[in-house]
Amino acid sequence: MNLSIFGLKNIPYLKEGDSIEKLIEESIKTSEFFIEDNDVLCIASKVVSIAEGQVMSLNEIQVSDVAKEIHRNIPRKDPRIIEIMLNLVNRDLSRLDIKKNYIGCRLENGLKLTSGGIDRKSVDEVFLLPNNPDASAKRISEYLKKSLGKNVAVVITDSDGREDKRGATQVAIGIYGIHPLRKTEVIDSQGETIKFQEETLCDMIAACAGLVMGQRGTGIPAVLIRGLDYKWSENTSIKEALNE
Amino acid sequence: MNLSIFGLKNIPYLKEGDSIEKLIEESIKTSEFFIEDNDVLCIASKVVSIAEGQVMSLNEIQVSDVAKEIHRNIPRKDPRIIEIMLNLVNRDLSRLDIKKNYIGCRLENGLKLTSGGIDRKSVDEVFLLPNNPDASAKRISEYLKKSLGKNVAVVITDSDGREDKRGATQVAIGIYGIHPLRKTEVIDSQGETIKFQEETLCDMIAACAGLVMGQRGTGIPAVLIRGLDYKWSENTSIKEALNE
Image 1: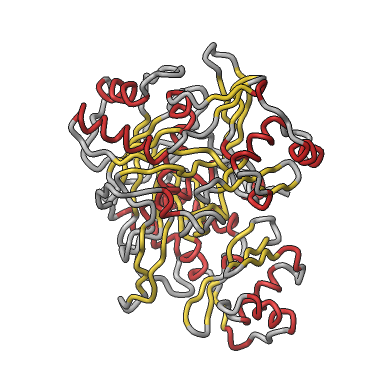
Image 2 (image 1 turned 90 degrees about the vertical axis):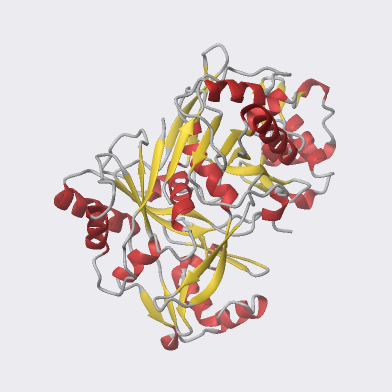
């Protein structure tokens, strides 16, 4: 299995209300490649959030005593953002993981992200994650099916890191058209199956896209992966990849 | 930036003492592609471990009381393997992270891996990680430079997971020829630099390779990534990507 990875170009900076699916369609139409059935399209959650208006003003936030207390342990983090995180976890502190300079936040579906995926837009505004990334992925895939006639799996990606490593990679937060896990048969030297191993396919896809997305200033929020061997599947959800 | 990902074929099951670099050379010579300068070669740590004789018999292990105690909390894990992990962390329990059915192990260099990267070979044997994965990466790259005349960065990968997700992806445990981190300039809609973001380039490379490596029973322990824009760099170490 060989893969080709294409960065989608000419996607302008988005503003609220823009149609990310239309911008992707236009980018594909003017690219040196065209989409094919079973391509996998990866889209940075940020542009999906902008298109869907998932921007929140920090000025409206009332900082609670609990948020103030957490802020004392991690002064780097704006207490208003901590307050939003408290709401994301329904004020269940066991779903926050606070270490020096780090807050991990376990979202309602079980996904754990640094700062709950909240990303600063400006001094007084933040981006939240798309409200339902699986639904966003489905909407974009269905739009491309209608407009370009191809079945393209969609993975919504977000940047996130590991405790032991500096920097961030990309992980999957929403999916459509492809199962988020892959079961691999481990075969020994005699050709016997010794075990089945489960792979987090969606995160490998997201990280692969990150190699091309992350380039400095090139503004490539969407990446196409071609050649991945998978079964088209319409009833998929990122939840299937999440630990309980 | 577009990428091409090739799985290296015809690498046989290794046994101790085999030269992984020679097998890779032969695979490349019989492939439909040839290596080019600045390709990135990813190799599964498992085959490097086998070639380097990093196999340990469990029968020789004396299980300590501490290992027995930990085993009571996580009965699924062979107490002899727990004993090896205790040695990997110099018996410093603060470097073990024990949750139901999970042991994370922070190695001497700071890398945290499930079970310390120990992988069962048979009922009574385990694979350990390569002794010095950076050095293995360098040795393989230098061999290919000599035999095929090309500068190829090498990333040694290992499978590992995230707390919130089912299954495993691939992460980097050793590197040569390429810096393990990438600094990305984040530019706003007016073209102004608003921040620099650090990316765990080595892990995105490893996960990307995992998409091709992990396929069921195809035996592809090495993957070539072509087209990645990076600066060749000989003084690199995975340690530069590790948190203290």
